[in-house]
Amino acid sequence: EVQLVESGGGLVQPGGSLRLSCAASGFSFSAYAMTWVRQAPGKGLEWVSGITGGGEATYYADSVKGRFTISRDKSKKTLFLQMNSLRADDTAIFYCARVGISRTGSSSHFDYWGQGTLVTVSS
Amino acid sequence: SYVLTQPPSVSVAPGKTARITCGGNNIGSKSVHWYQQKPGQAPVLVISYDSDRPSGIPERFSGSNSGNTATLTISRVEAGDEADYYCQVWETRTDQWVFGGGTKLTVL
Image (cartoon, rainbow over the protein chains, first blue to last red):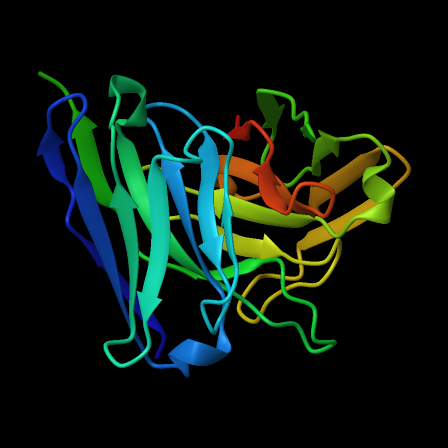
């Protein structure tokens, strides 16, 4: 069974840093790209960042580029999101998700999601 | 950046058909995915690649995509279908994923 469990959320002051983790199990971690998606309170989904299966390529939303860094540890089967220079508008539930692979080999949908971890940026 | 436009809300009576649209410039040339999110829960993939239904998703859910509009269709709507629905694409020009703003489906 595929499982994704996020951790590392919490309360942080503006300008501070936080590192989120997503522990993966039930699938071949290195074979799949992974991604982070966030949802501000009462708002819609916002894609944040993605990383290829081998970690050779990373992708970022314009809103977090230069402040957030995505990475992954193959041996620990864990996805990370290092968040620096946090702002109040970064307050959100952060979900990690697996980028699925279709039967034709295409890979752009998110087929499994974790339950999310809440990040609150406030003084 | 690429923009996906969804109606904020759609209402439908039980047993009827709900159609949720997702507008984007030449979206028909992209693969569109749809997610359902119920309050307090993580999103769930309900349609991938315009019209593919993942295992476990009822046949009542279907999708289409052409021109500037993709559509999620839910037939024989049930109370349990009440949720927020989001469309999503991968934008190759910027190497970014994009979500629509979401549509709240209300079952009357």
